[in-house]
Amino acid sequence: MKITHIGGPTAAFELGGLTFLIDPAFDEPREYQLPGRVMRKLTGPAVPFAELGRVDVALVSHDQHKDNLDDAGRELLPSIPTVLSTPDAATRIPGVRGLANWESIELPRPDGGVLTVTGVPALHGPEGAEAVLGVVTGFVLQGDGLPTVYVSGDNANVGLVKEIADRFAPIDVAVLFAGAARTTLLDGANLTLTSTDAVEAARLLAPATIIPVHTEGWTHFSEGPDTFVAAFEAAGLADRVTLLQHGVTATLK
Image (cartoon, rainbow, N blue to C red; front, side):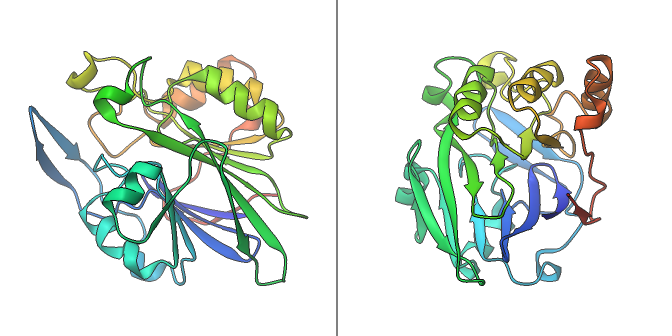
């Protein structure tokens, strides 16, 4: 599996001969004026979309927030053959295939095999957050001869990670959205995993290699990659983390 971190939650990876793009956000740094608040993007994409080459599948955890699907990302969706997201997103964006929790879709692989993508639960904040922030999804990818990959989406609930780990164990690679995102919408509650929560999630997901994303590039991310790594070092789990350098493709073995 090869993976490239583009910035924020956005990453591209190759699995089973297919190229996947997580949460396309390709705007340059800017402010987004939203009802009652401002979102600020601090850094642009490390790799322009045009340099990614062929993208077969977009995994969009949700379409409501600019850090997960921004203006440039939304514009490029029609160029991607398969776009998977929430059932709600499918009602708002033409061409999106919505996956309910535990619903799967089979994608043909170039080698004649099949890669299965399953939508899995995510909670974007404390209990009841859906009423304010909307429904979010994660994804699990599986295929014969391939590592099992979990993409958490904007999930802040470790209990849901346990459900996913129990159902799909063993998970080989976990792309965890962390950063302890906070806004005024929910009085500063954590909307994604804190670094401490990510350590607990990693224990549940053992022996998975942990790939942190969603820790930098926006002002509402309150914990950066250094905090994430420090938490894993303190827990004695530093060997489980692969911290990606922006724009540099890493091969996981």
